[in-house]
Length: 209
Image (tube, rainbow, N blue to C red; front, side, top):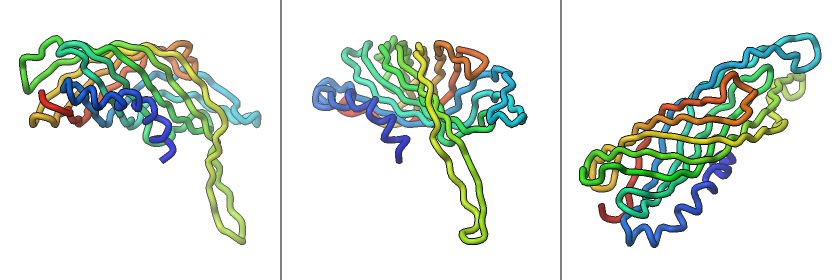
């Protein structure tokens, strides 16, 4: 899947430390679903120059999350995340798909509890906002077909904060509800630079805890 090929390289460098992490019992990976939201800018635009006016939408929909981290000490570590909208959304006559990715410092304030571990992250990253042109056409020979042509993308710097709690079901498997708050520089396509996200993931801790 092309989308997966785009976001997984972000996490590759973290997974390259697997041998070190096995010795230190510090490598975790998790995957989940959630939703990220941003208000509409309320902009009216004649997208195709034909007098048909569209209004820019608010951001929403179902997002996927993929993340990994390497705990260098019991309390501190580094990690990376990628969040992407599963399906393209409608945007003023076009389609759009955002991908958020970031690298973070991680703090576990409590480590003595084996089953419940709170977690805080802070870092920086970027947002890639892709736009597509959807078309539908029919003829008497081939019937009806659709196409979805990539047009362009817009990149923005972002800062990232998150709070999560890991609930361990076993020594290695955990459930992880998470709240993210992102500030996106010059996010003019939407009505706010602040993009909150709510998600829940299932993860696995490698090595011994």
